[in-house]
Length: 435
Ligand code: HSO
Ligand code: ZN
Image (cartoon, rainbow, N blue to C red):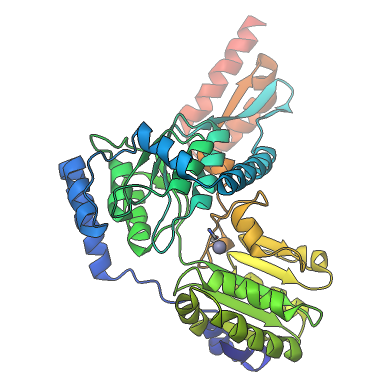
């Protein structure tokens, strides 16, 4: 890991210290995704079969997971894994239910009622990657809020293994959350299928979930097309920023850094501390713990673009963190709540020594589909609201129109929109006539 001292860096060096690994939107990627999308739109299921044979080395008979395979997956799954999925789902459900937006009804003036009602997005498409490892937890993080929102059709795509089956745990998690249909599709072709529809795959209104650069590029392309589908958020590789003080346990800090580093070679982990002793100790711990990891090669690549940064104070650490806007922010300091009020940009925050990021990834109840790559400056993680539309309603009585009509008339006149003005004045005149 690179060691830096924030206080000695000039403006340019500070910017470089917080730069993310370059995300390629290379012309070849763009063109490759465009080609895939065009093929799926033109040839539907036939294109999906061909592309799956080519990219996933798997001959699909049925594109949709049949009932029999759902049942077999559930029967094969270890009881403790089933129980853990059930347990995680119930806590994610509890938190997301409590955090769901509520309808609003308010009189903003006498006789002027304004309301907000919530409606589910009808058809949603969830993507669950299975690249270096299938992620059943992602099926929970997307499926639970979709169910709470009440989406009419919830479709999930996850790539099949070469034996033609989807991962057992992903299928079980999908079933637990009430996902309606699962398709054995991965990559850009899965995104294209859900955005445009094929004979088998229904066209969806909005697509959710993480993925590799092909999936991300496909989501960006379909979201720019009015005939395509909306997306949850732009996504990049996973990342964590840890702020630690001299009381932090270096082994805990190192374990948290490595748990993000093992996600992918382009993941990024950053440690900020005002304590040189802590930075030294974490560096030693990372090297020790890293060597024992099964995914040491992946973590090594991630660590090569990661940083241990010395800062002058906790206040400066918070400043730097807000600037970086991490997906995950871990505060391993004596009084983490004292810093929380100053946190402006982060996807999800983990407080204190006993809150590893892993619990949020799986089962504390919060969502793990979070804004990466600095998007936490303006985006939030997936929640029930992501699966809903908010529709406002207003209703005026005659008194209500008398109360706010003049304000409308003045503003319409100022904007020289005469028809707007008259829509009010002719009604006010009708009220006067009737009086
Ligand atoms: N940390 C990842 C989510 C995840 N971790 C899934 C384990 N499984 C991105 O937030
Ligand atoms: Zn994780």
